[in-house]
Length: 324
Image (cartoon, rainbow, N blue to C red):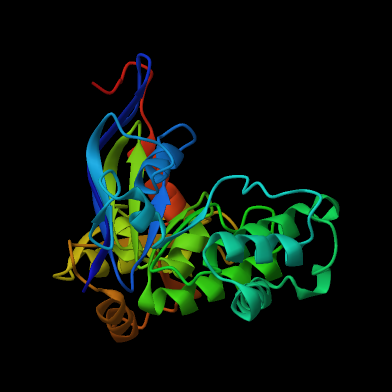
């Protein structure tokens, strides 16, 4: 795959505060990278350096092979950038603002109008096309920002909280738009919405205190949790010990936990969690064993490591930790 975004050892300090500490990453054509981290982790600073809006103290960024420091104008021409807040001229309408952006991008006449119209259509702005931007809702203002970022059909899209302020239907529309555009672009999406990472992103990078602490697919990050791919089931309390002993004897089972015991209740049930050994899938063998032992099962499902749990696990720290 063609690498369109390259960041190498980016570092940025604000006085004594190290905001970004030697971050390196790359994004190829066809990839959507979810950029995650707690507030103040350095996400926006990193994206501003990649897009050339902020000069790094050290390190380099390249867009489509063009060095941002050596040839910033050519590099920026390849980027569509949706910054946090996405300011626009409040007294303009989406129509006049996007046509203005088209002209700044080097388009003129009919081409400028066509570019503005197409971007507005993709971002869902046509029903407020001639309304002053200052009167628009937060969600529609966000759509104006999205439209200006995609207007020139850039090879690279860098989007800071693209669905901020949008209702669930609008969020879905923007996510579908990102998926469609990702086929021939490299996209970075900074977001606090972990569902967005699972539904849109092909890969996720987690940053904490200016450093990358995780890099992988959503599935790979979920595997960090001990209960990922565990089998949860509920059986009659009278069969709980029998089920636990039988399941512990399965070759690929690491451990069987009793989660909830309601033995003392009439017709009580017991909830069990069956943990697999690393990289093992046990749902089939568990189901087969329970049938063989004639153990009634009230419910059974395979657990997934939740991204919010993974996020908390890898970004939690005590007050004594500090970046060098």
